[in-house]
Length: 169
Image (cartoon, rainbow, N blue to C red):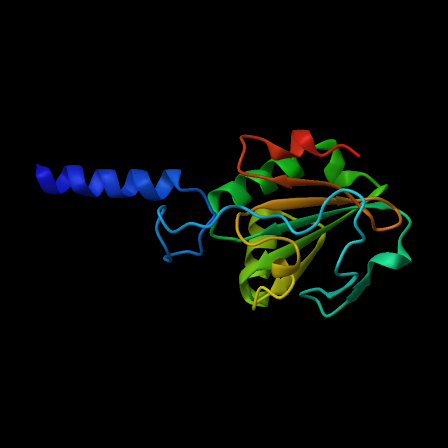
């Protein structure tokens, strides 16, 4: 009985710890404070990406607002956020460019995730966190709202029940 209680407690801790840590690394005690390195009014630190299909994305070529979603395929908060996004009006808006940036993800994992969640926007593999590290130190999903001139409007840590409701320019 004690073993079952220990297993249940361990699983509960993993479930409630969110997606702040890398899968399989760290503990709640050594989890760093969430830091966001960009704030409203800043220019976005990265303006060009290569998506999983090999296309170059240059944010300066679009006059739309942009939503950057930094996420991980294994993260339940990221999965929930993607489900809320695809069910929202924002998802099909012609006035918003959405770019998903898979933290420590490769092309194969992102392509599988895009198929499973029926995503219709570009995904970028950030295998070494070089993109993510310009925005934050930990915590996913991260939603970065940009205006037409690529200025940061708002940043959201998407560990809430429905972070998409907070996406307002």
